[in-house]
Image (tube, rainbow, N blue to C red):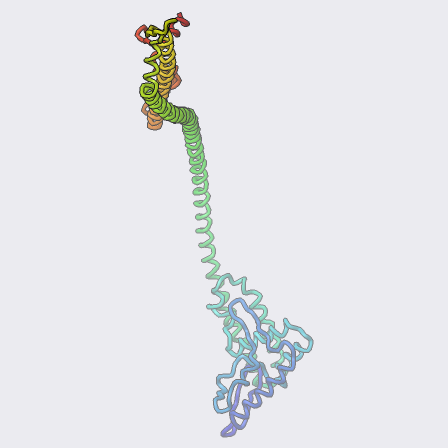
Length: 410
């Protein structure tokens, strides 16, 4: 190589040479434009352990003064080389599988991605999972080798070197697969033992689950019976509470009605008494002389002499006044009876209300049994007494109305 020339070498491809790095960069850019004119040339190939990305735009981003030929990678062979013609034929024929095989083998041969036959790659998971990757690599390598055989000696040497590497890697792979087979057999034995243990554990778990389900069912039945009893007790208690609360409301309403009636009767009694006293006073003041003079009458004879004599008009007047007074007193006495009766009935209703509330509170705290309920009902609904002693037949009542009442009733 002449002094000052720059070169770039690929496997399965003749070297690239130029007078300067700038000229070499220009050649690579021209080559990149050639490859870009074909659809699918910038393929991205997914593998089991890697991914091949053809970078046809890498030289567009590089300035000539910062270009380094040793950093060139992920590129295709010259389009005019025997290997490049294989790539071009595959692109023209739209044979994507063939093109991917060639790219994969070309990248592996130039060391841009690791070989699928290396130990690190083959250990990752099962070797059978990478079988398609191995076949892909070998197909591409065979195509490149056939093209190199028809090319220059340098390309033939590269194929021989790649074949030797493949043989070495195949031998290593075979030994590794033998070792892994033994490890796999040991792991399979352990797995079988684990499966047997898991089956025994599953049987034990099923037995425990069956026993637990039986215990849970029995407990649920007991709890359900207890809940039913509690619900029945609560329902009965609630019903009884409604009954006694109805009685409380009833006697509370009656007590209020009796209190209102007592107040009204009291007002009438006081008003009537005051009116009676005022009437008696007015009678004495304004009609006293006329009542007194009604007992005396003046009698005159034919000679014209007059004398005062007894008149029956006076007793009749006094009797009429006493009759009216007796009626008024009887009315006042009746109003007094109504007042006392209302007061007594209001007190009795409040007693029954308090008794029902007390019994209800005891029932709330479960301090009494249902056998005492009859006593409570008898006390609540006993015959009501008005609290007034009948004294219409008393011989001590001097009023005319009382005398008439005794005569009529006797």
